[in-house]
Image (cartoon, rainbow, N blue to C red; front, side, top):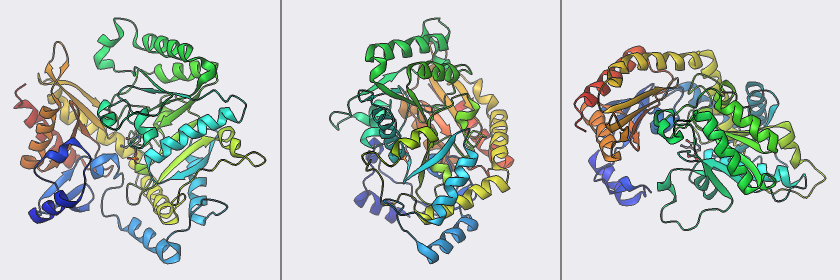
Length: 440
Ligand code: PMP
């Protein structure tokens, strides 16, 4: 176990400040919500593959068989250019059926960041093809996470992502997101009124004729699992429609059951023109992303115009699409969307004692994902130093064999949707135990 960790440290670049830490946690096996590290320790995976991904749990034979059958038949043939394949067509039909309204068309990527970049390009193309060639600005939000490519990374509102790599892409502007726990941001005004006023002022400053799209996660994920007030997205949608600006929902985390729905944007009245998905689409068994869009957005690529050259070697990867189809079957047949909400109920009940602790500012439960925001001072709501939240995750791993992670001052959970009530109970009581001994 230790030698493997050494190998990883010696040869594998983990592009993150935590690369400075003296060890690596080598996770080498998993079944359901349980994984094992290279030292043979059994751990409860409260992060779903470490990063909001393992919807159907680890070690699912059904997905292994779907992959093996497709690899035997045809492992890969791109759906770039004029090529297509059976599995990517069948999956697109399935996604169109699940997606709301006239969101019927699919562009495949290898993951979320490529999907965000695609969505940004598509939004601009949509306007340019209609003669509005100045519509290039993208409005994103502070605390938003949209990936690590130059496009997605620039749209990301987490400053660490942009340190030391020179200029970001131009034409991306950030606005304030809803953050109910920190309502001091709104100076006493109704949060949605404040945010809409700021958004409108931003659009007017940029010039509405210069704005292509706004991008946002239905609930902030990496920013700390933060849901908006119920009227936020409907009012944003209405405002954008008035200005002819497209809305991109980044559902890389939320789609496919994480918060209990196929598409969280549909639950929150977001009514997006483009939906970016990845992660839960295959439960992470193979890398795959799908950008879903309204017919009228897809139609801009129609024949008869100068060609738009955009695609990836692995677009429509048949093996990844076969796994996605089998994964959607599991989500559906095992009732895992409903289970996601149950997991949320179990965790809410189990974590109730944590909410009363002085170090805990807020426990936010959105289906099977949770953010526990830690505070240095409950009166001022001043956040703890991220290192302290990291220490909590470390103690949970070392002493309780539970995998969690901090995003800044917030401890995040996103377990597989097959977590059972006993596991939820075990995780909650360990978290309450560690937090109750926290000295802030
Ligand atoms: N958008 C959101 C909301 C995400 O959480 C992530 C990944 N955590 C991405 C985009 C980027 O996806 P990927 O890492 O697959 O490129």
